Image (cartoon, rainbow, N blue to C red; front, side, top):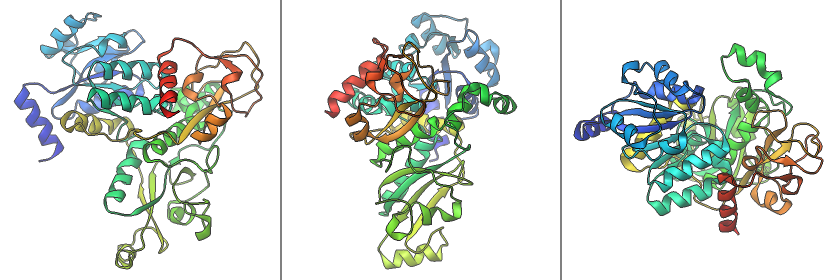
Length: 432
């Protein structure tokens, strides 16, 4: 039975679809809501966005009949009654949305580390299956969130369609077949510019009808770094050096470049995560090898991209938010996890100064003007006291930091009371 048929069968049996609560109705959230409207047996029934009217606008953009959207409310019982009657709920308050009893899955899609931490932790505590598209949060506290979900007997997972989840699907495929997995990675869509900010990215962002801040987080490398951190921690594959290598590479040469130096590649050993600049983007890849002669002959016969010793499993696209509903469906139907960190983290995205920072300045948001993210080995970050990117937002600089230098815990005063900081301290205690 296909996934669509199973969703429809469930809806017929229960008399309702899988009911999803969405937090974050920006470009990504609205897109996945729209895609879900085309699917059988699954709907966003409650949507929260901090901007007044944005959640309601997302329903409209997703082709939901406006008459089906209930009057705005912050009352859990009123919301539950509306959903039971088949109506949609819109709100500006994410904190109570997770408490609506007849929601099956909570989907976090804000991209704000603290909001992601608060929503995911509250949803797990409420016993909800939790799907997280907020990789910035996961890269910081994914390990403790996975632990809490396991203790509660619910799902916590990143999503199919975003690069980490798509890589993991390929990784699982190769691992199940018994291949040795040499390297995992992704293409970077934009030329790297660590100084990129919303102002410098504004013209291109306007032409692409996207947020300038979001585009800046792509161009300055932050998004690539956090994505590699989450897939690295989910597989145990760390970067070999701070920032990773990020070589220029074509799809054709993946199996010649992302391999050990002893065989002509760039790595000291097998088992790293990295990224490529070039025509690999927007694709993802897994480099495999085998020592079985018959399998080697068959791989060559099948013309898989390779050099006779290493081969590249390559997917030339990822559909991001549009593909995310697949993870939601599998979590609801089978309790299936696409990607989570269920081992001690091996990678960390740390905050680095985008320009010279002086005492008294506040660090702004990801894709902003003050900092960018840089992947490093978790052991190095711990030993050197490097500040995880997800804890940096809103922190106050207390010691000067030169442009391009990593920001350390001792360089800032953190925002005490934040959920993400509390959970990170709990995670660090577990790791210790």
